[in-house]
Image 1 (cartoon, one colour):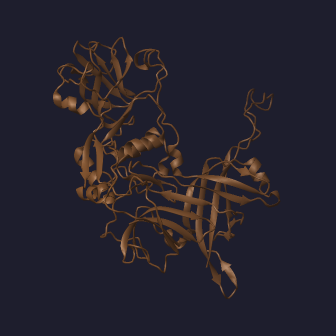
Image 2 (image 1 turned 90 degrees about the vertical axis):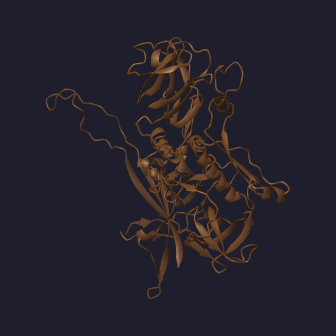
Image 3 (image 1 turned 60 degrees about the vertical axis):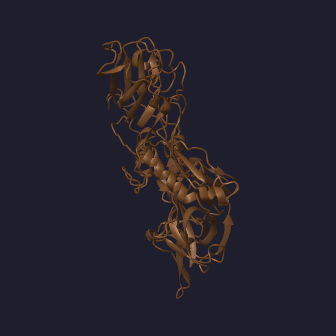
Length: 541
């Protein structure tokens, strides 16, 4: 048995020439486009391997792959419980006698697909040769994008980007021109428009017309649940939705609303004395209106960040049962928003990591305490484990945590007692808007008494809208981290590791403290190098 790897690179042959026309006389009409053909841009695939491979269609994979490339993937293991994971690495190709020089100088590979697979050759004892398996039996190791060629004298390196690359870019957003009306006045010229996705609490709309008291809530459709002036909801009443907010000025003490695919605006009938805030529910410009936080993130990636749909894993449906928790977020346009910051805002505190899969897609994975009743994806024992060693947990999780505070119904505009509050603002409303987050708590007196300095993470702001959901998550964090956990680095054969994904449970027994008798653990990361025959999994028990 011989393990090998294949590498497929999509590359582009650029277009050549420029469009032009020939002044025809007698043979063609004057101004006819010239008939000489130009080569248009075309895409092709080049194939390499580390040990040589020919597939069932006689397509060769030239054995030019040389240096080991390393890959790392993992779930988030910190007390702030932010979402996000990275996979990185590079590949090196031989360039013997300059055989790839023509390819390197005439083709472009920057940010184009790369696919790496692994397979096993079988030995034919009768003919004394290694047999190549069908391409359908090869297992995916990595799928993503490659960066530009980095040639040296005899080799060429290609850095790899996984699917999280799509989260690096800034979210496209409209900008005020300052020409007046819905384009904003000079006070907001050059600023980005606000954006509401899902349900939000006490946000400050952007004043875009200080003369006519026009505010913008979002760049898409939205509905106002309540409007407050200095925390008081009874002073300014709703006068209806209008098709053109500038057509008629609302009566004093009222406001009107214009909403549609291009945005949502409100207009006051009189100048307010105190700050204006609203509770609102925002939709996407397409009209999509997911309710749950994870579903909002999925639609945001597709619509606001324009991530190609095939980069979202098929196991991530539009309405996911993984996180049935309503919520939302508000971006006021004051700063640039990247995909990573949007993921952080929506997934913070939920115990969910957005992970790049081996097939090149993005998949959310929920980290929970290992469940003894769950059927393990793999059973490991001393016969299968090549090496095992303890790995240190993040200092925020070891020693165990005695208390988890999970925020809910995030208050986007903190208003404390004083000149910015309406004198008629009720006490219950003042209590809500005086703090950034309302809190659900899990705590353990036992942990606090048994450990001299147990961990006590700061309150985690989330995008959740309901207390019961925050309580569920706080209890899950307590079950996971409110006890002594160990992290083990376990080295196993590659062929076993390819059948296990992050977040899956594993049964493990080994000659190590606490593992003598079989226990259930959860896979939280993986690391491998191309030249090795093993993969190192980190297992949380």
